[in-house]
Length: 273
Image 1 (spheres, rainbow, N blue to C red):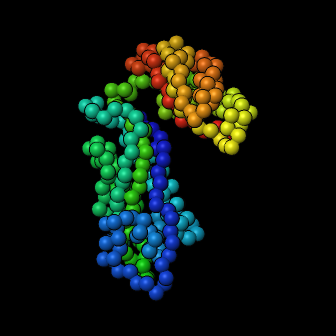
Image 2 (cartoon, rainbow, N blue to C red):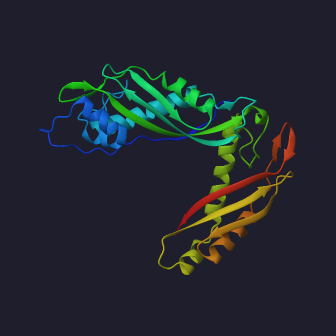
């Protein structure tokens, strides 16, 4: 089952040293031991991923590279954990580390994660990254290290028969991931449209927005219950709870192995006024 890779980012801030400063590969290697960002600050020409040749400047080239690798991981990463895995379903953070060699090949791949399956899978997908134009310093190819933090929604095989609660208008979603995304978006939109922003601006006159943590359960009948909220003002929390209790009954509750189950929901939301 494929799940959405929620986010992937690369170290993108770049500044340049004076042109007369010459940096050897040993200097870059020394810097990479301390911080990838330092290497990105001194490299003159970042590696260019296939299809990113027309991107203007190092910043856009690395942004393009990040997007390309994100698509690769989204397509190839197997997000179903083995049945014997002790890792629970949910969002996992993995930092993939590699270097772009002097010939543009990805080398020295590793992944920072406690789960062995996630580490091996991240390395396997990273090995699919195609050869690219290497990085250059003073006209010579150099080895450039990268670190890619990934946040990936994983599911344990034992939970694969689960289904997320169905919000009105999300019935036709073909996958459980798409169903969950649709239902969560509908919930957020309902709260956003219903929130009393005039009240918020009165109780927080010096602020332009407010943030609150909302928690509730979608029970086995598809109804919202056990609603709680935390906010920086009591009135904001009360408003969030009031709106959550007005959420319409879900078209279908969450299920596990075909049986209805209570589904916890947590949302950290910012409302602007």
